[in-house]
Length: 321
Image (cartoon, rainbow, N blue to C red):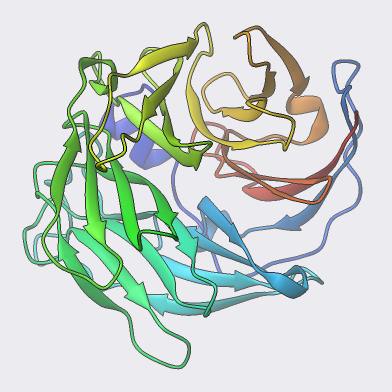
């Protein structure tokens, strides 16, 4: 999430909304293979704070998203309509002490098989920052506090162990929290997670016995083994040179990933050997991509328009070979 700018510049670029319209197809760029048929499926309303930050897909074609600046969680239907599920309470100080950014925001989100949503809220205050849960038909509640001095960002659910993992972009930490709720423990503080001036550890996934994370400042992808006793191994950098990397998703082809490069307005295909190719650009409708998700061979790309301040959107593209 977010880009390496001053608080003022980021804040000015991050307003958004509740009004949603369906869009026409965006033109495909010459760099788009092996992603094709890119089209803008949903336009979010920037004026009302709908800056889509993260996405979790659900059966039936729906998607759950966090709208960062609006402090909201929403569901996007298959047809592209948006319904707000929850708006989180604003901190008493307005969130001005939120680390690195100066405003409160909802960030990572995951969905459990029973429909329970888990998501993150960063406010710079001890009473609200942490992991939140939203069960169907219920109100959101915080189930684990995280340090007010941190910026919880990426979120992953390890279903077999019922554990949640969280990247902290300012503290350079991966936290672990029971999905049932409880105290957070620092699972990894490997130096590879640390920021280098703005935001460090960012996107997060669990894949093939390891936790994978990105570092926005350093432009890297990291692999941290999950040891047999549940502890973390040593982080290994698997890819470099990915400027402004935010969230990512595995394609289903081994360790190959698709990554959102927020600051350069691109999506990249990153191969297991660490080499990468640009597969989507602004010509495909990108507006500062923040997160990626796959349903079959359909790639969902969320753009929050933090820098362009024009058109936060959801783009769909087809994954080839």
